[in-house]
Image (cartoon, rainbow, N blue to C red):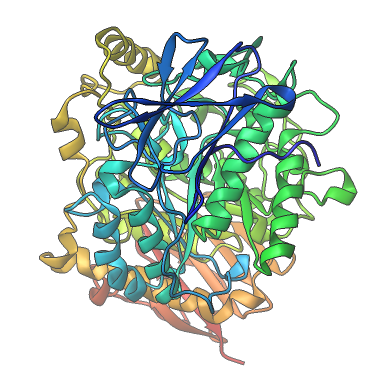
Length: 600
């Protein structure tokens, strides 16, 4: 493993606060303690350009900055608290927290049923406390893990989180570090694991002062966000250390169970040991120290099993990765959309391939990308792939942010749910999906720079040109765009939406009862001649799922007398038109699913 060095402000009771910052090109670095008068703490230069100093009277709550070369006064790049926003002084925080989860052990990955949520729009309060208040509802639904969109401090109080500029600081408007720890503790008390979305491929532009400190970025590569983070150029050991220390902090100090690594295909590293491999090695070491299990789950559009293959096989050893292919083929099947990147996914037989082999593009030529992509994932365990029918990206990066609720019929929502929850893969729901939330999830920011605001508006409009979407893109900077994206939780006063939620609950309970028997190896899947009926069976679990995607009823020719009906989406108790199921003459209504159990 490479260099490891603690950074930031570390308070020890009765000793004070040690400040450490990396600024290799600076001639002088001072710490400034803010009070009635600013007090200067000279920092001493150590190896590789780290600067260190102790302030014995700097207790939690102390505000501080660093001054470089007796000139620029800046917040700490490894700040753990920015109570006055991204441009103001950092704050020393207390490391201690009265945890109640000493007996908590992370769940096996195959037991994860993930619920992705955005703290600001998930609850009425828009805070970590607001999420805590909703945990009984998630527990009732059957959720076993929540995935929190990024909470690293961002400008203003409205943001998806991918514009974070202080990776070590939990967003103050959500409740800061203490609020996040309280949420994790409450989740563990409820038996729910916590995934945190972290961004190691770029930082936001507003409040990003890393370049003032040192070569955190490199011009070797171009990214959608400008210069790439420096993972393999001169001084890159210390940039890698910055992000490795960040990951270890979330896992060790915040008791986070898993990290979702955003867009790892944009972590550009041609070194002998990829950053992701080094990160996994450090996490393995932490696991041994803490006697705990942690998962790293990558988001990648490369369809590359190297991410999740074991270290001894030349892989990076990550626990899992998102599988966009599964989302895309479901989306094209149910919406008929084939613009943009969906152009590669309009064939129904893709769904059979995805169920049995994971990646659809496993060495195939992509018309959209104009190149061959992917590797074969057939032998990789199903639990290593996180699948969904909706997520923040696929909903929020539509021009109007429509959920599937607005794009397909109510009846179609139920087969879609079965495809995700009864797949052999690790299922993920997007907040509100379970009851058919009708509010959109749109892109929103609260930047402070007028030129940046205009650039974001223009950039969003340009992104949508590959799609045939009608209308005008909502203004990302508008508070109304944010408010429009808040969940209504309408199942509480709508029988139909509550019935959909009950259908999700039934599917989740079924999955939990058979999860140990789910695998790609014991899955059979076929399509009918019209390519409208998908029939897949988990042979080791004795569970069969038959889905009619079509707008017309379909007759199933198979003799199903040895199969017992356990779920029928057409049943009135799921707000369906009424079940007419018969094992002797099975007619599947349009846009419906039946789930059967072997009766012998």
